[in-house]
Image (tube, rainbow, N blue to C red; front, side, top):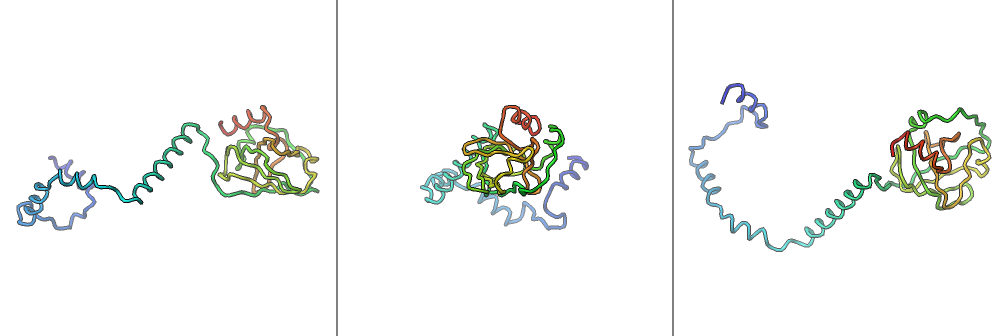
Length: 197
């Protein structure tokens, strides 16, 4: 072994250089070597085949199920939303709103974007089940809170139960002006272009 190789190997050794080592010719080293060499592997294998404890089997089952879910998600490419519910504001009913022309580049800069289906509308409370997160979240359900009549605003959204929507938000507030709305084919294409499918 060259000095250069010895030096490189010593840098990989986690043991500090000052730790004393025992010579392989000492009595205790010979006893350890003899113990290793005389270990009966057949006896050890038969002990390994003994019935496992129920908790080990249960833990293995849970691990296998988790791996199966991860495998399905990796094949589909769309992880299922699993996080706790999220609440976003639809804004105030008397808000003044003016819109700049829609641009995919501006859409791509949004910190939160998802596709969802409206499952409940109760006055000023709209519940969306998240179908896919494009950016910034993992909630399985999003509540949109705001006074009725906001759909009359420029770029406002008329929510209907069962309808599919594409939503972006910044600082807890839903964006309008074409950056949130009914999930039309054109809007889906813009979201796919901005965030990747």
